Image (cartoon, rainbow, N blue to C red; front, side):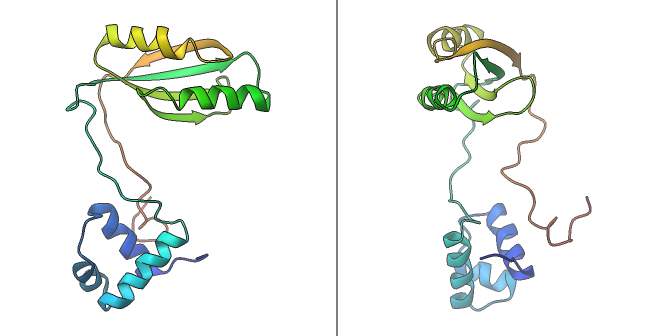
Length: 162
């Protein structure tokens, strides 16, 4: 699927609001028959536009209210050094997100912790023990202002003013 039309954008917008919406309700909302809507959703999934469905859990409610942003610089940036770090970071259960970055740091991590002492444990047992870590810069998030799962699809459709 290379080009999304207005109906695709409507389907995606509705799925972002409620991924558990019944197909019949979705079809009525976007103006399609249930079978045509189901085919569209299948095509969006097969093309990789819809990568999956999941529940967004609250780290705070699950006992990890502290969110830490960690910038990591490696000793080098060879393919093997990057791969070794990436393999190791995937094993740390407290790392929620890891991005390979351009600029002064090699990686940006979002880490969930129970409290400052728990982050110290994560830092010592996991992060500083990862291969090739030369420097870490840590910032504690004070408050979450916005956390979108993705860009509003209506922007691409010209519906939302940017």
